[in-house]
Image (cartoon, rainbow, N blue to C red; front, side, top):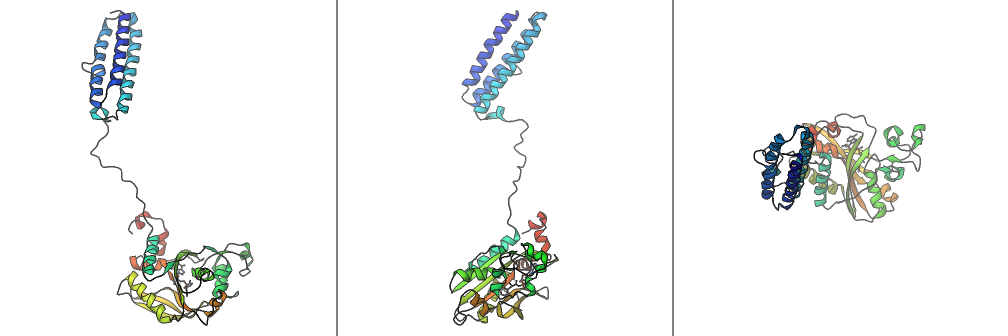
Length: 342
Ligand code: FA5
């Protein structure tokens, strides 16, 4: 066979193949055309390859080059049509794909146990009529101390016990008006709420607080508190104890034992520490008491006509007690093997 007729056979075949792939309206028709032109056993390509043998050896190189070009062009045209038709049918499936293998598990997000606890506490307190309130984590001394009846020389304001943001803390000066700090307690939110609203008030505030405490099993420099504030007329200590008992039985179960121990906070009078029994030991969960008249005066309320109670509980310790977590540091280690349990 002459080189010329070999080349024109290929030209014709190429046109035919491209037209056939182009015209295929479904995966079945496309596969038929593929077998007809490219089929390894009796496709047109196979016939053409056979004809190579009859070509003059001096023309074989040119014939071979054109044959390769034909193969890649026709193959490419087939693949284009295949992807247009969605690769359906046997021919469209990548042979390395095994439909019986298990799929790749997507990494599904997970709510941190402390966030879960906060949501749970808000739900319980919400059922008792407490609405959520918020305040900033960067505070001024007025909201963190002064309005809470914590005088300038009180040890709670010591630079060593707080994260002050101003440089004045480095000079060993005590808190300076206008200086800012990371709030050390959520009691700040009591002040912020009372400054903008009139009684009756029934709010809780759940958020982060910061203290330069050395980490151990029950302390961390960043932790969360749940603050509660109830202001109305004729509020008594009995109301406070009832709310905390109802809260504790809802969150920790009906058999929880709770104890109120006389204590002192500058912003409540009288004041108590709230303890829960845990593994035969009384563990302190927070402080509480009747709002001190000096606090009402600071926010412009008349202490003769309003009364109220407030409490502040450690959220981590509540979460730990409920889930049997024995070391607060586990909550912030970032170890997913620990966190995935909740
Ligand atoms: C207070 O912070 C008061 N503001 C509570 C209060 C509010 C009293 C309203 C009266 C009225 P105290 O410093 O005791 O109190 O902290 C309260 C709770 O926070 C503690 O009982 C404990 O559960 C938790 N807590 C304190 N320090 C840490 C810490 N470093 N890590 C984890 N939890 C802590």
